[in-house]
Image 1 (cartoon, rainbow, N blue to C red):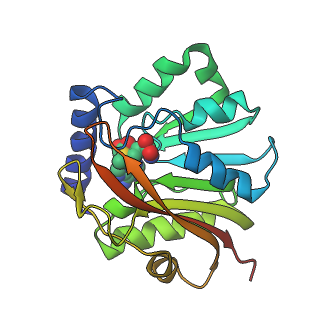
Image 2 (spheres, rainbow, N blue to C red):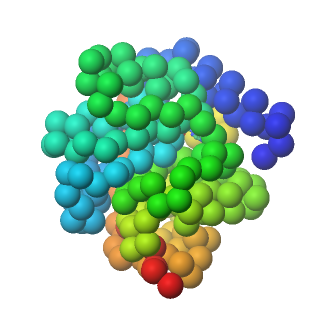
Image 3 (cartoon, rainbow, N blue to C red):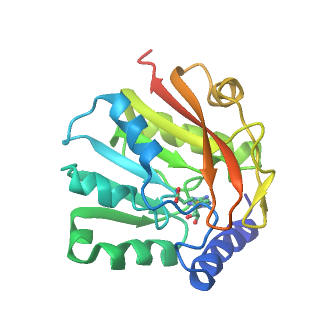
Length: 212
Ligand SMILES: C[S@@+](CC[C@H](N)C(=O)[O-])C[C@H]1O[C@@H](n2cnc3c(N)ncnc32)[C@H](O)[C@@H]1O
């Protein structure tokens, strides 16, 4: 992604979150129940360090806080998205780490996270260079044997979203993209019903980082 693309991507997402209500965007969910189901599959306890990458205004973090998780981070390229999360959480926002950053550019400290979660972000990375940077970020920042949950549009999902092109995946092609350092544990196709009445097919994948 060039500097120009980065500025455009950031302003695109900021524009979306400043012109649409958070519950009107196509990816809105009252509760991220499928993400929570997949997080439960990891078996991590409440002391686990969990990052929601491109978490935007998702209520996943609200539900994880309510379940007692203590080390939560939400990263997004759009400060408007994170402001919505901060305002919704009120004083509870002090308990989480909100981070405005581009996931293809940031460098985290080594082995920061037990769990990496991404719903509907990786599929926007249409350049191989950005996907490589994203994957390197996982390998650097997630602990050995750590957990990675990625939900993308499936092979039958939309070819674009929010006016941007997407790359669609099967569990197999996502695994191939991520590489041999990842073990695919379980995957499931999930239908998402958008607020506008459309149905979008996602594939949720749970990987573990191999400690090689
Ligand atoms: C389709 S929304 C999904 C939001 C959230 N994960 C959910 O499920 O409700 C995609 C999100 O990814 C964020 N995003 C897009 N590109 C990003 C990037 N390169 N780095 C970080 N966040 C990004 C957007 O701002 C937006 O909040």
